[in-house]
Image 1 (cartoon, rainbow, N blue to C red):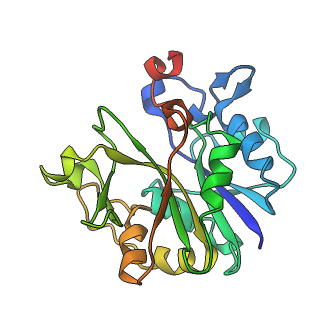
Image 2: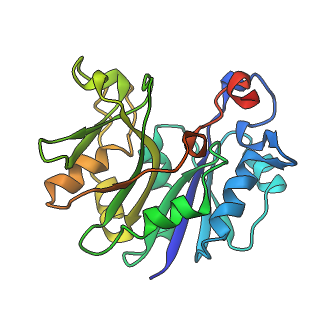
Length: 233
């Protein structure tokens, strides 16, 4: 089994109010993105594919890794579209771990736990977390047997779904064959007009698969840096 890590790092990060791309903002002597790459490489992946866009040339110059490659997302059309940019480098037999260039503190153990849930019978596993204030996050919708059915984004959620406190961190592991198939079926028919990566969860359920989940030990592992207030926390 080959492991491919896909890191989404194409966003502008306008809320940082900085000329430096968000993923290159420094944290403890390294950029946010370099932290993510370094943790990914501890998993000994076949390759680390970084999806870049805003400030692409600078990002390529300032990060490094043993098995690092870059793919370009010319237009930011959503997380699903970003991962689609990497699919030419993903084979059917691969396991794909999807990470984010602005989420620097996820532990190696948490990622290992997530990857351990993926198999040919369970090709999709999610990292979720329960938050006291889940505002802004996609909600994990489960049925009466506590089995995951879908992820619903904040802007598309019903009043009842907004009460759910278990949310999507965005980090997931997926078998390459199913990932490439599900990505080809994505639609942008939603409130944002974007291609949501999270829509593949409902596709997995429709195809008869049980979506596995695990959670990190600490909320700090999955916190993203979106503005300078979060950056200082």
